[in-house]
Image 1: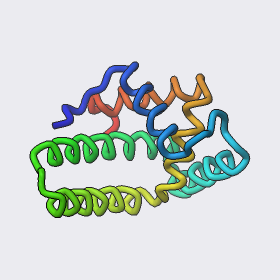
Image 2: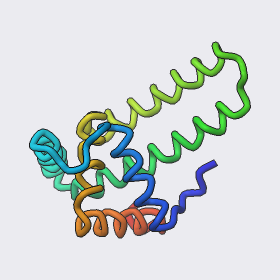
Image 3: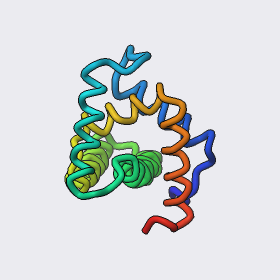
Image 4: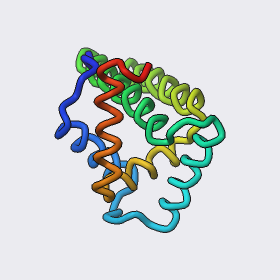
Length: 137
């Protein structure tokens, strides 16, 4: 199970991997990604919350859900049961997006944008570490 702590390098690796998986072939933010990232920021601004903190909270929740998925799938060999596990996990992911008011596409675009912005990525990593330490609850 996800232990709630990730090292800085693993955080960056997962973020880069998520960006690569979410938007194949993208090596730099596109205009669409920049617009989607701005939309995430605007949605967060409505609630007077730092958009990076919103995405960081989502990131931690999603990492835990994905870790749970891998653990559950490791013990399931029947294709039907594997599909049921994936469906349940997808429902949990959808709930995360809905709870935070950010679409999956906006989340993925924000993560992709972070992968190409060193200064912003460092700020994001600091927020993740603060949240993991329990200072942002």
